[in-house]
Length: 203
Image 1 (cartoon, rainbow, N blue to C red):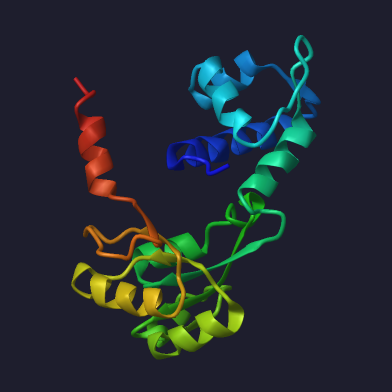
Image 2 (image 1 turned 30 degrees about the vertical axis):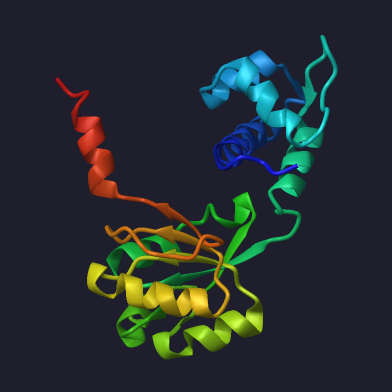
């Protein structure tokens, strides 16, 4: 069964909530408790979990470890998913230092930049290569996911190159709407837009 895009997003949230419960030693969780932690209604939670099979027992709830494993399998996270980052400037370098990707099933295996020597001077643990080596690395290591942090003027050109060598998912931090084929998924992270949204609620 094809899982709707919004349901996939919520499954990722459930997975994170379940991981926190597991870390605290909790063995089972009710749909009401998990839904509240994820910020959704319990009916929505049950519908979303229905896409990945019948899990849990009425009156007993869901087994935390079992549900984590089922969601990981559904999302294709049984093994670490390789990811590359393109654009190792200030924002890109900060993301390369983030330690949480691996815990969620992703491994940033390399970064690429037009001036790799500048990025290397930041003493990053992840190798930073010249952007000219990007295509060959993607093909050799069968990378399908990329984090994009390049300046707006170069974003579409870089994306065209990424798509041409097999990239299927792009987490885009560049403030531009990218044009990609229908089989490529782009998630945009516009920090200024998020701040604008938050500012509405500040009195």
